[in-house]
Length: 202
Image (tube, rainbow, N blue to C red; front, side):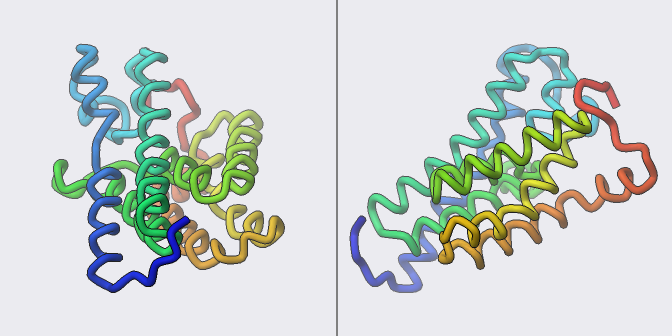
């Protein structure tokens, strides 16, 4: 890993690169390419894999999940290989923000769960694997995607601390706050008992 002292302009550049990678709306692109309709007019209108699944095409949903996770990982790995850990964490944060607020979609993006997990896997794979496990466990238990996302997010700084990845504490705490902010409507539906389960059309 290069041992470089980055200037603020260089960190800003890696932030921009991370944002642009994160803002690629793979869910929208895949559903359009596969003739599945306008994703914005399907289900919740979200651009993530859970809503793509509402088209009934599992391949499109799986592709969206992998590509949304992959863009977060690529942003981290590219920044780390060329500029070091500070750039990697900056690119990670901005890739998440790019997915949630993509310039191409008038800043109306997704909730960032796959991107969040992808960038964690690239930053510190043991932390990422543990968070993916938490997501899978919660989803298997409840069949509700948002529950998995919220559980994985809140667990991430705890897992980072437990596995001695102390340098990730600030980033994972910030990402958790952003995940919860993006899921504020889901939290309201969970409280009301109206949050749809995976595979439902709502």
